[in-house]
Image (cartoon, rainbow, N blue to C red; front, side, top):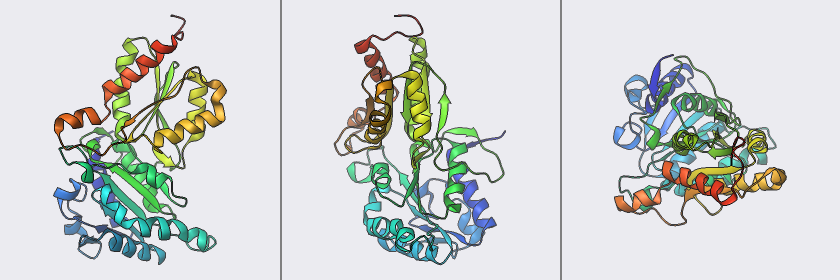
Length: 334
């Protein structure tokens, strides 16, 4: 199978779907500018013109409202927000309107809109340009939330989001743009609501989201040398969450670490931890640990950024400390 980068996979998907389906269009700030959106939209304006690739003024609320209205007429808009931070401006449209319409119309009217939010942090961008808001959207009834971690899934989940008849928040992380992997040329889907096991193991389960999946895979290789056999679960979809997959893994390993590059309080990791505690507490041999952001705004200093954002070393240290504290048997060895 051929190799594509994560960003190439997004670009190919947009070209293929917009060409295939006349009801699909892209709208948002900077959709014709690589400075805003990497190379994800390269060539689209030249191929499809400004009626299907709509570059807009800076007005997140209005942009999202236009897309919502179009979806209500049967079109399938993709509304792009180049930095998730400024999706706060669109929260009235997202939380009060888009998320509620299907319910309020008694299931008689679908809202097939894809809300594409990009996490664009690091590089000394500071607190107002570095936020990962996945848990906020996970909290809102009526929204589906997907968060791919690799090139194959970003194409398949984007296609699934576009063709879902309900609103989907598609969370894209620019730190993944250079990751390379196998991607089929044809259009395909990755099912919303199904996680994936990235590595099988027997000693501990690590559940991860987005960029952190790549860090957990690196950590798993390091921990293997310690004799710790890690099972890695990529949730892929935050809502609906694949609880069955997580529970099955934790029942097998009896230990859980959750890695998510969002804030600790009321975060994704906290929700997953609570679900496991509520449903299969008796399977746990040790406390659940979280590898997450501290409850502080993102710093601007590159030195402070390195301390602020969790990485492979943080995951390794968390797992090692858990086994050291509780001195459990690994593979028959102390």
